[in-house]
Length: 103
Image (cartoon, rainbow, N blue to C red; front, top):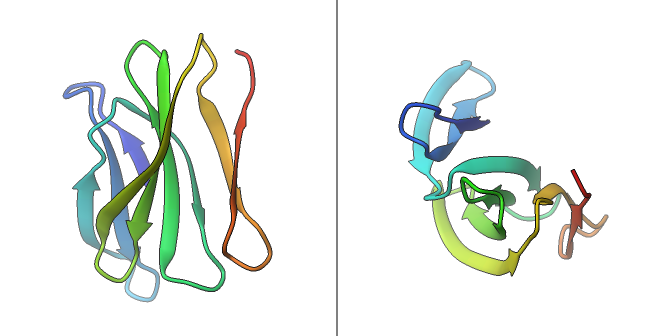
């Protein structure tokens, strides 16, 4: 689950056990505005897009679902009012497409 705190100005990923519906853990992404999340169908990986508070930079982070931790930043781009707002894995669960639309 993605969340953005208006109080702290930080974005988070919260892991929820689907069977028990209990929160397992929450990690901070270190950005200001999480915009998209996608999970791999083949691997214990998720990718998250977030941006800074002024929406002038976006990045894609890789999250290890098994360890519930941020393992890598795949890329970071400078934007002009159009953050990455959608992510998708391909059908093999390997490649990620990031989509940015002008706001």
